[in-house]
Length: 462
Image (cartoon, rainbow, N blue to C red; front, side, top):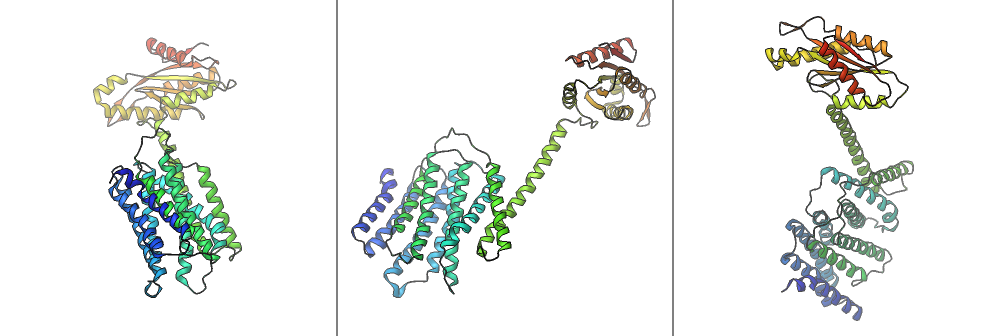
């Protein structure tokens, strides 16, 4: 049997059933038991023999979901024609209910087109999906729910089926929002929505006592399953659409706000909403709180990573990148007086070569401590690389020049490192900010002049 025939066989059987149902309105075992259930059996055959699917797990889970639905349908329909030997309605209802998690696994894997879903994406989708189901339960399900006094089983399934439909629709739509747009995803969403609508139509007909075997809702169930299976078995195509990695935060925020409002109303007016609505509402708020905790931790880690990216690993001082950023920010304040000091150690390389890098690193740490203690409050000290440091000191020419001399003086007495007495000097280049853009060049020129002439501190004239 060709792929074309296998693909359209379920649709052909569905169309045939619809024609027979319109022609023969009264329930008939050949039409409503055999022909009706042959549609889903053909779907199982199509899924089992399809040669175009990309994800065998998606196919297997969807086939399992449809198989459970078919078993429930056969038992339920058979009981309509043989009431004397019919089984409890709990068995088919349980089969219908077990279909939902399997269907969601199949649909989610197909919509994502084999792409891995991060656990944060799953969490966001779950918050939105369960939150929307809570809203739908409060405003759409509760008003139409039948009241089964004393029958716990019927009440349980009457509540759980529409909630399951809402959760499935909400999660599928949510996954579609964070996935590439494609015709296949549109087909899958259409099938899920039609299937959910058929459940609500069945519920409405049941409440008004207008439902009978062979109603239009029966064919809508089949229609939804046929369209869903067609979407899952469609060949995967390379999508050029931009992948959205996460949901828009506004959607989650609005969902959480509405759920918080529902919980508040339920607290102030205990009987306004049924108790089962509190379950998805509280679950949404709990997951949202957990998500907020993760977001705060990520923000803290991002801040720490940003600080680490702008901090010298050895001395803990700002690095060149951070220093230049601060210098640029101060340069945008024309009324502020400050000077740039560039400091280059004298004699550090011979010490580093003689005693090794470990001693050299310890010396740089001690030098940075002395420089930090000698700078006035509000100054910025950074290690620019190697044995070169930079400082930004606020004040006029005389004040900042005194600071430069103090920095040189702080290295006038030796360091004791690993029981060794080590001496090192420093050459300081001083450049007062004059509103120009060549401050670094002027300070660098002054520093080399101080080193070349051995004068310790050189001030570059404005």
